[in-house]
Length: 204
Image (cartoon, rainbow, N blue to C red; front, side):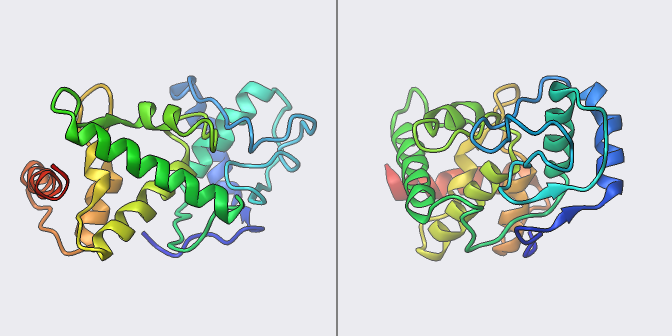
């Protein structure tokens, strides 16, 4: 993942138009309650899931549709920054990462659980940060930072333990990170299996 869009930037209109078209296919999106403005109804004024990152389009002020549009648009923008706290206080961001690590390692050590769904991890973080939905782009940036930090310490890519609830497989972010760190991703199942085995050796 790249350096991403800096706080204060605006989303290009092409993202907004594409997002509007996608809303009909993605009608279950919810919005992080601690990231969205509850007073402003215009697209220009409502804050996206990254604080201070705003959309520069104009659309009707239906709040449900608007929040879906902004979430979908944000999912398509590469915002990953290895050192960013995405507008949250450093202590809050650090606490969320520590809590995520704790949950992932605890579940890994429990043979009746092992893997953690994206939704369950989002729910576990609610007391610290309310991401609102597993699709939240900033939530995935948090996972990316955790994996990078763990890999730097020689403990493996912890994001291998986070999976979709329907197929119990990790998302594309894990495989992108694995490739960045030099893993062979030509066979995704083998790549994922090798990483799980490494994590089990490390933590169990």
